[in-house]
Length: 173
Image (tube, rainbow, N blue to C red):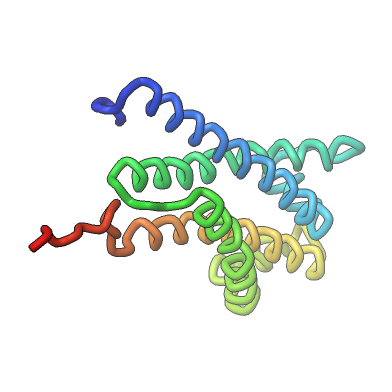
């Protein structure tokens, strides 16, 4: 909590967190527009979204709501790093957290499609044909990666050795 911070800094910090949440919410809405094309069943069966003309809009809303906590977490770590004296720039931090989604999603898809450790295909055998069950598993694993990527990226950035906020010069001789 930001108790010893002046009110204008607190306002800036809370605004940063709100902006981060909104940005990741929009990214989540866009991400779900891609994944609803891969597997509408993921949203209908897995998320409880009703089928029909509003499926894309409902999927975007699910993605927006899903992206909010990830964005708030990323922005919260950014605010914490800045408050602790670290020189971290928002575009670099936000960009790295966002870009981490791609390899993380691809890795999760490769691993989960190859191993199917939770037997998603087997569990879906009475409901979905094998092709649709595989696309459901693909969509699910992409979503797991989409959460793990930015979350792990901000924790790695937070764990990096802190740089001093200024360079200490030796006293003049």
